[in-house]
Image 1 (cartoon, one colour):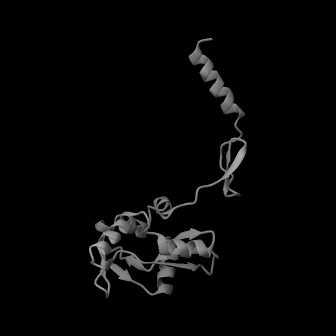
Image 2 (cartoon, helix red, strand yellow):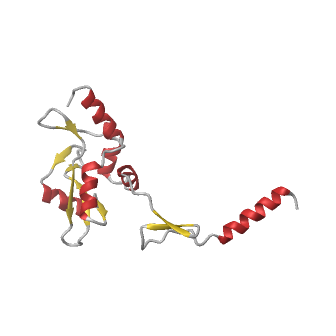
Image 3 (spheres, one colour):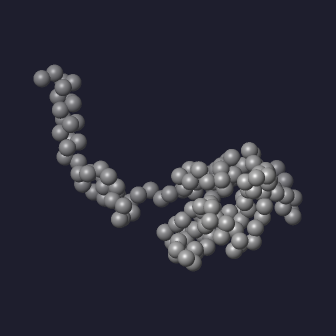
Length: 160
């Protein structure tokens, strides 16, 4: 048998020897050959990308393309996040307190409870396994995104 065919046969044999490759959804571990290894932790950027269809996530990822609200300190915002427990479902959710009006496109700052209800009604939220994870995300969601880099640049330049 030529060497190329031997290599293919060896690889095929090895592939059959590896147990099922699908991730076990009941654990935070995934099979790696015959051993289980911990899943890499989700990053704020990966969570945002998984939810990229949501309007508030688009405003985080592509802030320059959206309107802004001027803050009291002179800075501008396209989004502000909060984390709460949905009392009806028990889900731990992160949602924007600044929403974009569908008709006018303008941004509007909402009170916490009103923003939470709007998020639940519109689906504009991300749910997390625990409230701690939701709170952590709501505080660190810009890390590694273009919005984070822009903010660091403005701080370095003394803008805020």
